[in-house]
Each structure stands twice: as structure tokens, then as C-alpha cells.
Amino acid sequence: MENIKDKVVIITGASSGIGAETARKLSALGAKVVLAARREDQLKSLVSELGENAMYVVTDVTKSADLNHLVQQAINKFGHIDALFNNAGIMPLSFFDEGKIDEWDRMIDINIKGVLYGINAVLPHMLERGQGHILSTSSIAGIKTTPGIGVYSATKFAVRAIMETLREEVAKTIKVTTIYPGATRSELGHDITSPKIKAAFFNSSAPPSPKMDESAIANAVIYAISQSGNTNVNEIVLRPLGQTR
Image (cartoon, rainbow, N blue to C red; front, side, top):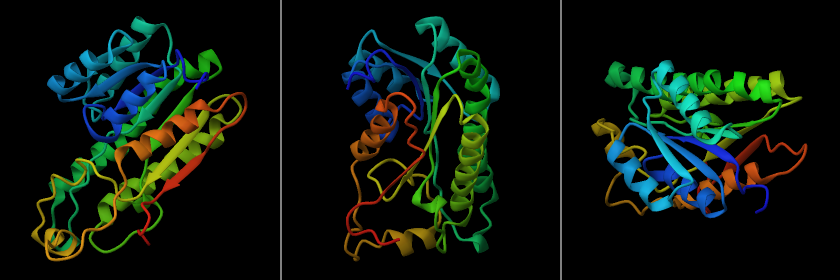
């Protein structure tokens, strides 16, 4: 895709899963990718795989200073930033009566504040250039909630509200896209500690629920970024075939 070649794209949550797959696909199309996450060993390995048009910056998205540093390092290396993909997120689901406040706090810090800090870090640069693209991963849980996902769903509804408001504020110059994935094969949810959630959603005797490959989400990101001119893909909703909610 000609519109991808040489674009400079920052990806948070890039050490694995959707972020890493998106980086691979963008790099293969000629983009320059800036990978951000906390796990340096995995970032190093991915940059080694992708070559000279990739770099990494160890980043904790719960720290605004880290996002500011990330953006500056990307500019120092590649001269400018065309797109930011706010993808970092966690999903330690639990029921409210379990009172897992520490997990609620972590989801709020990463899933909401991480998006806000990313926007805050890159927006002045994009406004100065008069162009740019900000994308964020919400979730089907940002459209509809169900028992057991209340706080996670709240964080993804928040992403939806943040991104829609951002779109309205910068619609004349900057593209804004929110991605709403359904069930996807990824590390998301590996940190679930709730026995009630594990019994409800991960019952080994139940037939496996349908899930998409991470590449499906990466392809959606590429579709949005590849649009030329004044075309702005605002929202993309993806579910695996068979997922009804």
C-alpha cells in the first residue's frame, strides 16, 4: 500500500499480541515503526526482526513523562510522527463483589490514562504539522457490557468517549480512529485472578468460544492508516464469526 510506505507510526503495547503483529505488518509495507512497551527483551527481539526502520523505547504508559519521552525519541530518530496507535491495555476481569480494587486501579491507569497521556504527548506535534492520525484500541466491551466485565468495560467506554470527543475537536486536521475488537487470540486476560471469572468464562468442559487472530486487528489498523487524502475511518468493529455479543 503506497500510503503506508515511509509513514512513522508509534505503537504502544508493542511487545506482543496485537501491537507486535501490527508492527510486523506495517514494517512489511515500508512503514517506520516506533515500538513502546515495558518488556525490553521482547522489544529488542522485535526490532532485531524488523530491521533498521524500527526502533523501541521502553515505556510505561501510566507515566506521562514516559509518553513524552517516547514521542521525542521518535521525532529525534525519524523527524516526525504520522500516527500513534494507543494499543496498550490489560483485562483482569472480576465481579464487583470480589472487590479487586488494585486491579481496577491498574486498568484505569493503563487503559484510560495511557490513552490520554499518549494523546497529550503527540497532539502538539501533529497540530503544529497540521496533520496526523491517532488510533486507539477500545473493545466490543466499549459498546456493550455484561456481568463480570464492569470495570474493564468502563475503561473501554471511556476510550470510546475520549476518542469521539478528540475526533470532534481536531476533525479539520487530524484523523482519529477507534478500533473495537471482539474476542481475539492474545495475551489479554492472562492476568485474571478471579476464580469466579475463570469458572464463568474459562470452563474447560465448555466448547471453545470463537476468536480472531491478532492479524485481523492489525489489518484493520492498516486499512485505517492507508486511507489517503481527506478520508478518515472513524470506527472499526470486528467480531469473530460466531460471536453474538
